[in-house]
Image (cartoon, rainbow, N blue to C red):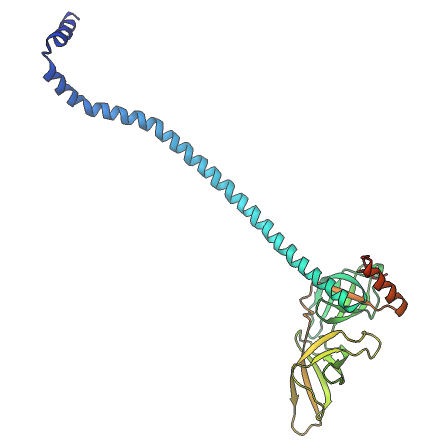
Length: 276
């Protein structure tokens, strides 16, 4: 201890050990840097580990939130599409000027050449056999069987269905026969000298008393004629998509007095979408 005290006094008063001090400081510098590095590392590494764990938690939370938002977006898209369909149906009901009932398709019969669908309205909603069924664009069929809460609709494309139609351009009456194909109707036994062209619009003629006149049905796509035969066959494509329509309209034609009352109800904003 006396030697150490003497060395300190000698260094302080006489500066005898400056060279030694410089040399020792150079030798000790790496030790100082190593110590500083260990101190910094002991502080930085836990911070980085904590930050990475927080980032992983945030990333996991954001992924879960993204999945939820995407699921909600899908629901929103579906709701928007349904809203557009219902708007189209409402516009169709306003155009046709009849009292209508909105129904939704429940099932489709898949037997060959049979085109039938089941809807979620029945006797309890006022549905009756023979009731015309439309979508937002055109006629799709008629009710052939009714239950308490559901009904079966025979589509115009069914091979057993025939629909009296009228060619809008020239007033020619014919029968549009279903073929079992969802995009094909046939008008057969048309005289060769009758003016029938591709693009002609077919509407319901009102003959037979089942469908009111003036509803769009189909548009002729081609006219076929076999050599030597006195008749031609017109091929038509339905204006509606019977196999794809989700919501449909069941039409109930009103007598003239009730039709006037219905028009007044529309003018006053009352709900007239359901059959009485």
